[in-house]
Length: 514
Ligand code: HEM
Image (cartoon, rainbow, N blue to C red):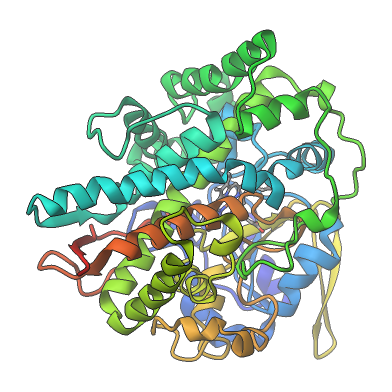
């Protein structure tokens, strides 16, 4: 109970914490979804800018940021005070702990500088063809089945996860997988195991243990990920890089770029290459200069590269699959939106005259961009992020109140609450892509739409995720109507824990278009 009166002393609203568990007991017992924990406080105390207080075994003081202005300040303007994420989750695994998400301070700056050139538009174009092939194959696979008279009812998450896994395996790691067509695919089994190792009950138990007793956890050598997962990433990152280097093999994928990074050969060509102004990619994050010109790549070891391979799969797989699942779920419930999207797709198909869609053409499809942006708003696959304070930060709360956020304290940014606040997004539970029309998107309050986070620490893979999701939707909509079926749930909710996953299984019907 040490510090339980901290917020009372500094005069901020807070929920009375319990001994040992702070405000997190309901989440730890899987009774409440982590973002809902502060939902009512958000509406009660929005004007306070900053509230709340979570202490989870760690004896750590945390705030929730409820003010978009403050979000901008801590993620961009005063970023130097808030460079890192909190280490609560990542410390439960050696590989996770060395990944870009977990790296801190100078090491993070160096790694981000080294990795940024991998995710520019020109590099996305290089990988694009591979994802096109997967999206075409995916659609053809289901089309053939439908033409044979099969009624297609899909488990949306499983189906799109298979597509996402195939896309990442080829474009990131350069190996061919058959997750979509082969129900028994070994790669898919491993990828699912990776997600389960983290978000399954044992994973959650492990990271609670890692929070509570970090030294004992370390001493016992426990890891969230099993040895099989570590060996898989060692094989597909280190062994493949070594082999390509030895035999001068070239493939258009992230491993190739990682090899160039490792040899100090890959630099950012020009800033514009990232922040592609002429493409319609509203949700994509802006890339910032992180203040380190030269990345000292020679100091990175094998495990550092393995960890980056792991996080590209780990951070990209579940998020993109969820985005596709939820966007298709909304399309099944909003026929008018689906028709409008299909009209845009059909117009493109006519122009293409049998050829595959190009990267530029895909990113000029305005309505597709609006639909994906709205999918990300309504069901953000990353509904919460945080920043850890690395040097004391004085904050004026208005009305003459001043507080200091101390080094080590954590600021949580409840992305999903901003996305559902009717002040910023009227009728927030309505799937309405028109919020992102050219006129309307100018009106969005900066700091309230954050599907990929904000500032120098925002998602590095946003362009890749958007490219994958848009391609799949393009090809799917060209052949199928996505419809509700008897097994489609009327409403869905996040799981009552911190996994950010939807509780209900979403079944959808794929019906061939005339
Ligand atoms: C729809 C898909 C995705 C969503 C919604 C998403 C969302 C996010 C969010 C919210 C963050 C935290 C940003 C912040 O705190 O400001 C993040 C970070 C990150 N994401 Fe993504 N992400 C997606 C796909 C991907 C993909 C495909 C990759 C890799 C290929 C990726 C790699 C990362 C990495 C490495 C970070 C940590 C960046 C850093 O700390 O420097 N993500 N993502």
